[in-house]
Length: 70
Length: 165
Image (cartoon, rainbow over all chains, first blue to last red; front, side, top):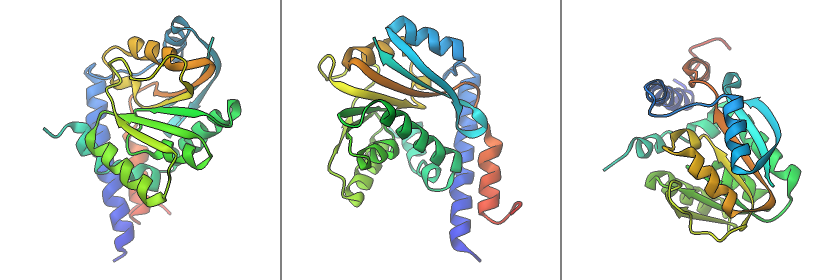
């Protein structure tokens, strides 16, 4: 038995379960996710100038946005 | 009372240790920060267990990491100590309240997977604007759709030797 592999499997599996809970919270509106236009709008309204927007993280599920305070 | 985030803190470091997309995101955020500034004080807003704070501190930035979850911060402090890093200050602060920093204080702010949990994210962004110096950069990584569970599970299976090689 490779205990190190088992340990990694255990932790990632538990992490996956936590993300199921997070997903449910998002789905029920407790948390929210953002479209590119929504993020840009919020940042621009606050006074930031958008420099770049990239997709990132697992299956490009994130928006990585760099902006500058004007 | 132990919160969801306190419980999450117990397994959170499986992400930087074993989940490749997270490791890549970590590199991308540090790269974004270093494009616009090579020194100064960076705020890691919602620092969790300190992964991004530590990566930035290792690149020579002075970092202030803030989070409201006790166990996340405890873990961050342990990791900071174990790594022998001095240039990180870790504080328990509520991002949804006025932050105890002067105007124009930070060279840059990063926020990774944090704003989506805020009740009034517009007010949080407004506060970031206040404490960031003019021309300072704000690097934000947020979810654009629900987290996909399968990639995490598949990686767990593969790492556990239960999936494809």
